[in-house]
Image (tube, rainbow, N blue to C red):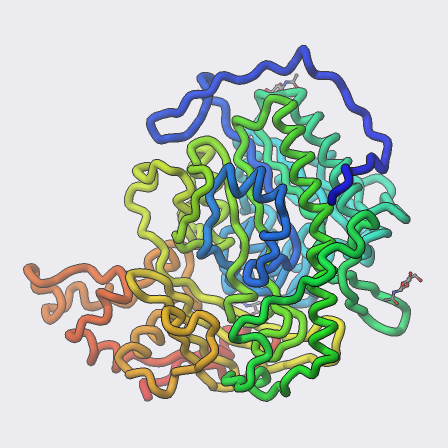
Length: 570
Ligand SMILES: *[C@@H]1O[C@H](CO)[C@@H](O)[C@H](O)[C@H]1NC(C)=O
Ligand SMILES: *[C@@H]1O[C@H](CO)[C@@H](O)[C@H](O)[C@H]1NC(C)=O
Ligand SMILES: *[C@@H]1O[C@H](CO)[C@@H](O)[C@H](O)[C@H]1NC(C)=O
């Protein structure tokens, strides 16, 4: 079915057979596989663009399954906390929620790489921390959105020679990509497939890194599939069309359709604001949705081949055993759910719950973990695996990826996080732009609970119990008792502005005032509140009922703190 990848650009294959010595590995007491020379591990990250988990895209990637899923652990409760590429990518590398890094949109003035750099965020992020410890950091493909062709220099933390981002307006034009090349001329290609160029460049970079194995590396490979093709054509504005597959993958998956799950184009669309007003999608739109779905899967086939080629090369170079390999994406994607045409940007599972698979020394093979994690957890996860100090200002602690959990010590498992959004929603490749899509949610998973509670900028609220309603078909806000909602309102109020330790243990903020209060701190009966289950104790009902509630004053397209307030309890 698959043809082997063509070498599209001449690349120099150097012979390192004399240099390649298989490093002897042994697990230390913490379960990490460091070698005898205390060599730091390498990190190789495959970062795709808009890849869904909920439409089963991973099932169509046999090589990702073979080389990463079967050899590693898949985290099924892994989320982006802002369902949009740019804010999501900034959270992934900075370990901050969007309300802290404030890169809240794709384009200026409220988002893009320009806003990222303007705020000096590249001085305090994972690449900079790793570089200080001697890492070589390398990046190829789509970076934080909006890298302009006039931008000449790598952000702080990246090796100048190996920062090769795709640049505007040719980031998503599959057969005519343009790369920036460290202060040199732009490298524009025509007629060659983006993922294949990235694959060739990746092999060359890996071979360069193998020349000095005592220097550990971070290498991020970020092709844009299965993102739509995007053209900025003359006066017609920005045009989204389905992704273009490599020629050898055209026509695959002929009979495949978007899974017809209970929330796919439902008869009743029990949703607030703009989503609730959507009409049912007609058959012609559904045909378009299915065709786009096939194009997405076809476009990912070259990525699947790239994964195999890169991992085999890493093995050939003798560096596989000391490398953690991650496969993830920036945010999820929906096609037809809740009557929405193609896109992301909503608080629902399709857009936020995303693939995250990791393999490497000390990580269980062929396992799934339900530990709750987000992109914001990623920097601490890498630092922990590298046995490096973790800055206290990070908004999330390490994901417990290693089989030996003792290493995670007192880290409180994550139970809840905020999902946040401040921009328009829009349908790709269709009419529709919606300016009432600002919202804040609490997403909570733990100890028998699986909940999504959302406050919209319109004042509407919605609440789903995903244990009973995994597809979030029925909004049960109206029929839910106030004692539960009062807890979620309090939690949302902390999570929407939390920073560092208060994000990692939000209940400690709510219960700190009355730790000294006699009514609550009776030494014998007092138990620290660390979860929703603890907080639901009846003795706290009056306290939670009295707390102010979060609300937006109006729908704005950016994060203005004065627009986000609390009002006295209803
Ligand atoms: C976020 O950035 C916007 C401009 O894009 C600014 O007006 C706002 O005050 C910033 N918010 C915070 C919390 O700094
Ligand atoms: C290899 O990397 C180490 C660690 O960064 C560095 O000290 C050393 O000089 C490098 N060796 C060569 C030959 O570049
Ligand atoms: C945009 O223009 C390019 C170059 O003229 C053309 O190849 C491409 O098909 C156009 N895209 C769309 C969506 O019209």
